[in-house]
Length: 79
Length: 180
Image 1 (cartoon, one colour):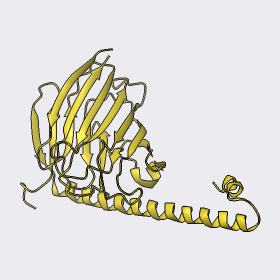
Image 2 (cartoon, each protein chain N blue to C red):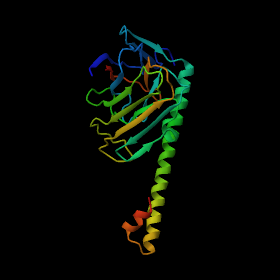
Image 3 (cartoon, one colour):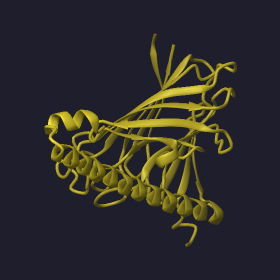
Image 4 (cartoon, rainbow over the protein chains, first blue to last red):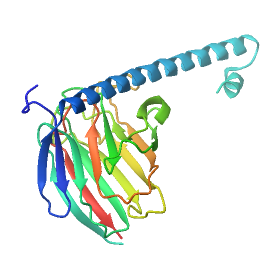
């Protein structure tokens, strides 16, 4: 990645209103990529956990209704 | 209390982070309003983040509630602890002036050295139609609200906003106000 291709910091001085642009270092880019991949993995994990929770809830309500509860009654037990 | 405009800037191509430095120690509170766009065409998978005084060593406590699907995003799940997460999702088109998403971030008592830094943030879809949402289909119009605290009593003199990943903020407008 050339300097021209690198993401930049835009620094705005609130006293002088001067704006400067500083390219990210290679280390900053590597850290950013690693942080982003970790974030995507965590997002995926959160989606999987939410889906599993929803499936467990549906299953629990089905089992409770099989025991004679109405769906409304079962839903008050299963949070 | 008067609301005083300190800075209004538009980001150019290639900018991934924006820092407001040398914030005057003149006001009581600060308010940051940005209308963000990115260079990504299609669904933006990253998030908009923030750090105070460039610190990565302080702990940032932060939770966001998403009204679209009633999900709570926590530090432990997604946000992490060395920055604030201000927003996620959209905009769904690149550098489109009619397709930018707002973030409104209020920071209280930014100069107070006996209290920790804290604030409230809001981020919403701005009416953007986004077909990339798996959770709610199309149209997708999310709304986040969040509470934030940095475990630091250092007076705030700089605020950095950045995108996770290496996308850039092209076409994003940023405003900083002093209050009181």
